[in-house]
Amino acid sequence: MRTIDEIVAAMDAVVAGAKAEDGTDRPLEAGEIEQYGKLEAELKDVQANAALLARHAAYHTPITGFPAVIKPQPKGDAAREASFSAYLRTGLPNTDMATFAQTEGTPSEGGYAVPESFRAKLVEGRSAFGGFLNAGEQLTTADGRPMAYPTIVAEVSTHADIAAEGAATAAGADFVFDEVTLGAYKYTSAGASNLPVKVSVELLQDAQFDVASFVARRLGERILRKQSYDVVRGAGSGEPLGILDGTAGDVATASGSVPTYAKLKSLEHALDPAYRAGASFLMNDTTLGVFESIVDAQGRPIVAPQTQGITATVSGRSTLLGYPVIIDQACADLSNNVQGVGFGLWNIAYVVRHVRDVQILVNPYAATGYIVYDAWARMDGTVQDFGAYVTMEGTT
Figure 1 (cartoon, rainbow, N blue to C red):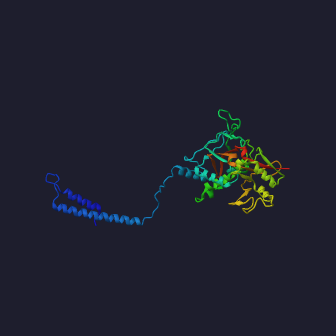
Figure 2 (figure 1 turned 30 degrees about the vertical axis):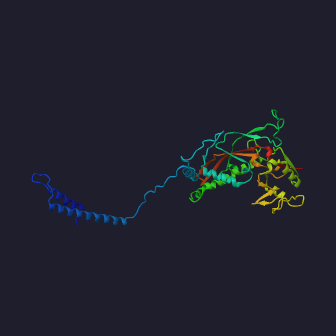
Figure 3 (figure 1 turned 90 degrees about the vertical axis):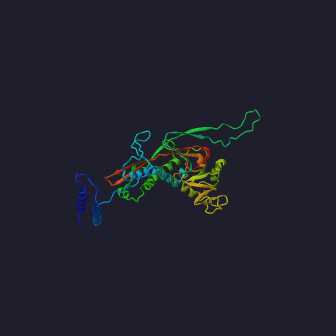
């Protein structure tokens, strides 16, 4: 079998032979056309044979590499979440993340704004954490600038009047408003000795490990535990004003640390009926245990597992005198001159202000094999209606 080059050379010779006596090209004769056609058919057969042999040889050639796989890049919120996950695993920031060089007030080491999905995990944790932190009115602002917030003095005795034609009313009174400033105290997740949460590099290298959920849960628990304490017992100076800080106007006292059924009923009726619909008790679990030993005038336990008792369990939650009970371990035990029980309409009595932005700092320590996390969340809280709740304290 001739080669491709040999066949092409023979085809060139046929074309070159078609010359007139004066050297110009002449049309190919019938025999020349037939000869060229046979050469062309032979060329196609040789080319097809060469291609087949090349394919056959490729089947025996080892593959030394794979072409690069181009993956679609996430866009928008998905890009932020992917970038934030990479930041949590490595501590290396990237252009898809919003940075904070410093906090408001005193400059300090900054962090990175978390995506909405991470903040949602913190909000879920706050809801699951329970206690009084969820009971007050919830405000969420885009930033932490001081915010003037109106409060109102209870006016349960103020009413309308019937006035004669053309005469001024002699009853009633103007609304009495006050104003408080809601700030945004910075809560850090650092624990004892200012130590942040640590996670080993080996754990973070596992692609199946949901690092965002883990960090949100751990950091959120630390922050929420402190916030929960402050909205109950905060002094209001350098921290939120707690609902049981001792400044409430109406206090029903109990004899010693064990209140009587009569004192408990006094506490109920110390709250104006206008606020009782939807009201609930607030106390710690130890105090609830004290109430479980109290009986009413007929000798029935006021905390009873059956619905016929004054207190019953509804959907796993205790009720006292027919009102739900919020258990918050930040509440103090009933003792001398210490408020340990509250009763009120909490979403009217108290307001909690959260700042939407949450910041997190990831710091890899190569020498120790750990990556450490620290987060900041800003919050404030205060009483907005002192008439919407009453408290009980122990007394000697």
